[in-house]
Image 1: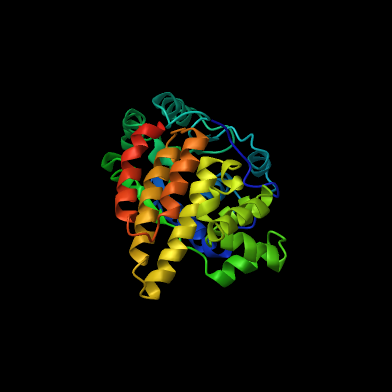
Image 2: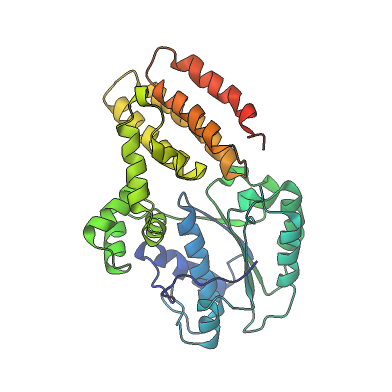
Length: 337
């Protein structure tokens, strides 16, 4: 549970499509209309996290304007280095299925301490839908009776998975997706990508611009492109493509979900009967991906074999029964989370 820099180039200039939201939040804080807890919703989990970092930096900075922290004051420098004593991030620990009650208790205790730099302390709970019910319940007290200097930020791409008791005690902010031109322009001018790299990254991230940044930064573009290509060139007689066994379960399923969504969209628009099969495939893989995201760790060889068996049957007359068996088999894949 630590403070972290917004990016390697902090202070980052806020993406243009987020500036208004940052500025509006600051105006609400000044006028007293802002609450003490905010749920930031986005299908791009990296975007929601970036927005909350930028919002926290703005809260800490006494010279913030136009949605940006100044980047020069002691508070901004500490924040940029990831050592700001009034900011902490809570996320699921490596190897854990969820965010636990002890993590939330530590965070709420930190909120009750005197700020070191100014007048506010901020806790960011990333992917808050991953909290256990006990953890979520332990957060309720600070949401109901917050100290005057507390701000709780929660991010989620699955609002419906947050308990109603948490949702009802927080303000909500759905982040707008950028237009295609905004995303491409920002990647090129602010992140220094060339036009071709920006195009590749956005395509592989399904238009999620901050996730596209992470793909490029981690040097994963070529790997993900090869993975996407394997779905279009799979020969059922040759078995699963070798690359399927070389990537994480999450990476494989993310890429295959995008493929199924794209093919389903194309088939439906083309009025092809197979469109319903692609959508059913997407639903099955979504169930599997959700379990993996929540901490399930199936054996890679079993996962690859089961997913390939389902994938190659898409469009076949036996697909309905194959997809039903796939869902039933999840219990045998060590996915009971």
